[in-house]
Image 1 (tube, helix red, strand yellow):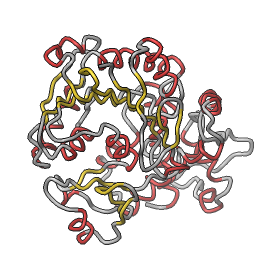
Image 2 (cartoon, rainbow, N blue to C red):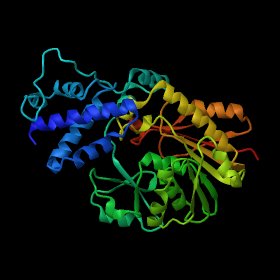
Image 3 (cartoon, rainbow, N blue to C red):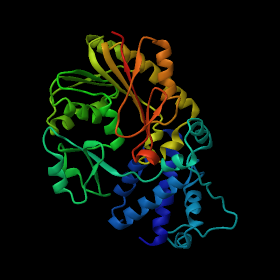
Length: 391
């Protein structure tokens, strides 16, 4: 592909990604994969170059741009080679016209920047949310050791404070290590540790998804005890079994829930769990490093619906915890309405529950919990709180 053809491909992809953000369509990664699946003529270097251009443009635009061309014109302002690729060639974009609309640079939509400032995040913290993410993995202690994996992957480095975590060089091929390692951000590993899962416990992972935290809990429990991995998404929950089989985890029991009626499928465990982990659906503001276009998808109305879902799940989780057990609440969000304020509201409704102190290898206190941010902790953004049930 010529430089102009690469830029035109990036424009076409960005147009699809912008439309998907407005319409609730596929994620950017999925759109890129689908695009090149029908364009076999594009070599690996072309695909990589186009992908990098697309994601550079996404990261540069705080607000969703009007068009993919406008997004790339923003980059072209500071890149003469990119500007020259707007050459009007057969497969390239039209030349840049005078006074042509150009996207506006920024870290996030203005309303979200305002919410983040209110949550005591400065512009440096906000900008770090759209930087490139590292490749972190959790070594599955049930089947191997950190030392063994470290010896097999050149450049693997320990992550301080996390005995099972390694940071790998970008682009490392992890597929051959399925079952032995799980791709999991250091922050996700840290908040999973807040559950303090131990062998023999009964643990409920209330929003298990595909089971990333379920598998981490099973390793901490030495595959002894019981983990109820519950979720309302059949497709995502269906991914747990093959992952658990590969990881040699036998204590995870998938339970499909009915949205809005989650407690009905969990009555067997009412007041019986040592720990309930709620990795609640949230805005995902802490994961923009991996999904930067997600900040174009969020609206105030959607955020309000997520906050209400979180409130309801906290109520469900509280009913499952045994006396003196623990409710661990996690969101990959840095907005206070999903984190510290959500926990304050729960404690106001349940004054006999108290916030337990958390000693974690990273993060800073935020309200009754701990907040991790990319700028301060070199992790994805998270809020986590641990609440103890009354005796």
